[in-house]
Image (cartoon, rainbow, N blue to C red; front, side):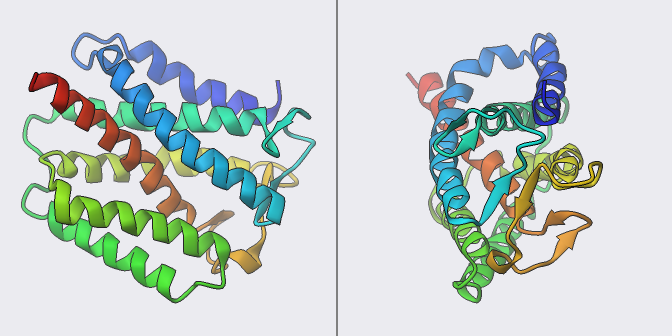
Length: 229
């Protein structure tokens, strides 16, 4: 297997095996979770292919399989299943083990902060494709939550977001060249603000936010509708 494929396999194996833990019972969430992952994947696979075609980013052929679909290697398709699955698993574990919602008093303030941050970043970087669209999508999703959804689980989400950044940044660091002579995934710095966390564009932390929040939103909505029937 390629380096990228090994990373996806390793990222998926642990959360999948632990999905059958009695306390978390993550497997019981699979149907609504896969609905959320599918919607998230549809959006980001389309934009990912567009960005690959326009040179916003690209993939090193030395570390990925040669087959491309929508100008994306197979491993990149796997990314949009594996990473949301593993990330939402962290969220499910926190909900199982923390009976009191974290950040309950401050969750709306945290949402407003990130909403403002992403909106301002989009507003002042309209000439940088990755920064603009990344932050625009995140700000719209956060605005919907702040004004309309006002869920009772956003405190869990914000804690899960902080926790999941640790494995996310490790995997992303490897993909962006922290452990290889050349990056597996390269970025065109003219299309982002150029600030990096070691090898990782800072915008990837916003990308991670959306890729976690969107599938959770769909999953929680379906579970609520099912429970109310």
